[in-house]
Amino acid sequence: MSTSTWTTHALTTERLTLRPWLVDDAQAALDVYGHAEVTRWLSPDMDRVPDLAAMRLLLQQWSAEAARLPAPAGRWAIQRNTDDRVIGGAILLPLPPGNEDLEIGWQLRPDAWGNGYATETTHALAAWAFSQDVQEIFAVVRPGNARAAATVRNNGMHWVGETTKYFGVELQVFRLRAADLDLAAPTALGPPNLSGD
Image 1 (tube, rainbow, N blue to C red):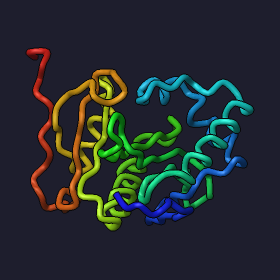
Image 2 (spheres, rainbow, N blue to C red):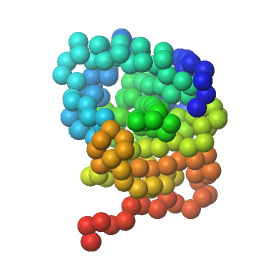
Image 3 (cartoon, helix red, strand yellow):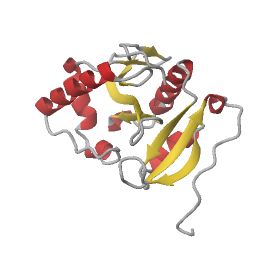
């Protein structure tokens, strides 16, 4: 990763604008992170944000964290262009323990699921990361989160394996390289069927 400091770099797609979180986004953020269906799948573990005050505090922490992150890492609010409504959040963050691998992720409010926003977000963040000399990015998915696993595979990410290396919990790891964004490339392999079905 680059050693320059991350700035308030906004990313725009056909339908979305990814921009830095603001404390004024607290209610919109609570509409995402206040849902147990969203937070139950996050790594590291994150409880559902209980109220507006807690969400404001978390947004302040994220803002302070963003000032220390090396480019292209960061946290973004996902804003829909048609109505300027914040519908989710996205990340490019260094993965522990060594902070050498860069994780890509997104969290959408449940009423925004199924519209292709995760795919659009993934492509925007991946293009940004690859333009900053990042060679590969990773998604970590909790076993059982079929929606996220399907989304990362649909985005051209390749299954690498399972590990407890990140966050001390069992996670499926998927990798994306710049060539994987080529829609003409073969589809990504999924994890083996471990249940024997």
